Image 1 (cartoon, rainbow, N blue to C red):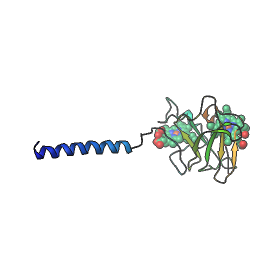
Image 2: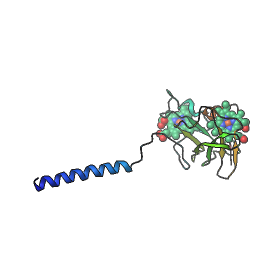
Image 3: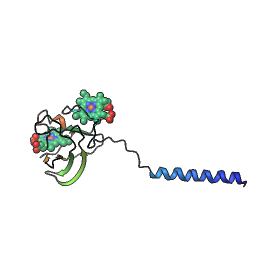
Image 4: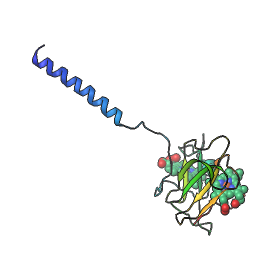
Length: 156
Ligand code: HEC
Ligand code: HEC
């Protein structure tokens, strides 16, 4: 083997090795969209998010869970809390899923976090207050009840 050809071969092997390694280091890309504490991309507090964010709706993303949370005055958004879903009432059983509330007091995700048998939502405010839904939610379209035929979800 001529020295030049030998060097090219080594370079090719190094390149393969390098690209192989960097591929392994990259986490597999996740396409799911989640609200995060501090996030400001959402809008339309209190409106029925899934009326637009559904297949065939005007919103690009089809949300599986989405809704809003307010302060006790039921009109000021309550930002940056955390929403838990439990398998049993009152924050008991298994913690099924966690979703952060954004800086606009909204939460949303395209991920199928809700199991078919439903789960018990529990809202946790930044002040430390906690409120649990006494019955399971079977749909993540929270604002289809809250703010329509139930009080809006609220927490301090
Ligand atoms: C009247 C229809 C409508 C309603 C109701 C609605 N949205 Fe939207 N939303 C849109 C449209 C249209 C866009 C812009 C296109 C897009 O990015 O999906 C959008 C964009 C968004 C985005 C930005 C997506 C991105 O590009 O990162 C978020 C987040 C969002 N909406 C959350 C919500 C939440 C949460 C609710 C309920 C509180 C809600 N939306 C209610 C129509 C709506
Ligand atoms: C089918 C209607 C319905 C849907 C959908 C629904 N809820 Fe509820 N929710 C209720 C009812 C009924 C109550 C009990 C009455 C009340 O406290 O408003 C309740 C209570 C709550 C409470 C406790 C309120 C309090 O003041 O103690 C929270 C928190 C809550 N729901 C969060 C959610 C979240 C988050 C979602 C979406 C994942 C959701 N709910 C979807 C009907 C619904």
